[in-house]
Image (cartoon, rainbow, N blue to C red; front, side, top):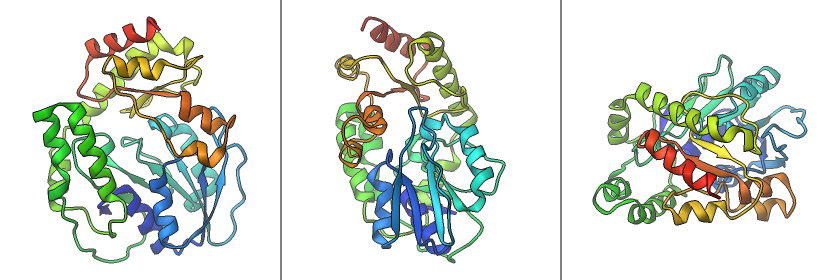
Length: 292
């Protein structure tokens, strides 16, 4: 199913499979909660360990499902193990794992705009249908994509945040024709290869000092997740015009001080490795990191 956002994919799953209760990770963004709250679905949060696995696996009853995020595109094997345990009761949020292709029957969704230059859209795999949906219109959501070319990344980031806000509360729709067209024009093999190459270049130099043990070098990962010993590295990178996001600012209020999820939010550095960058860009980032 090609829908208008990742959160629309989760809403679709809740509706089409009559989900009555869902287990969610505490380490997630508020966008995941939006369809759950919108449809009045009861939910519980579960804890994760520092290796991003589920701390205590819940037992699911009738009408209950569990959602797990393929964090940074680095948890493919763990997702496969969860699918073996939970089968069709598992929902995989692959917003950060565009190139993950499971060999199981789990339900899963993707958010391509996290990886490539599209304004919106979500891709959902499931075995049931709500029927045809009205297509969305993306005309007003292109400003940040064009603005990056004309005005640079800093101005475009403000427009990106505005675009992100416009998706909140949007009705469930099919993917817009323009987003479909853009997605069909992308060289995904090139995107995947460049991201993997950048990841490997960073990991070769940072792996030994990374507090997060990378379980595997994935295909086409979203970022390189780096957990340093101390603090202050994020500000240092930003001062050198290396933008690093925070996943996710709302998590500490959900978890409290000293929790694993709060630690990951405050200290984990998602280093950009996307296809706009090459070896020289990775080396510049490494110079900043190794001087810190």
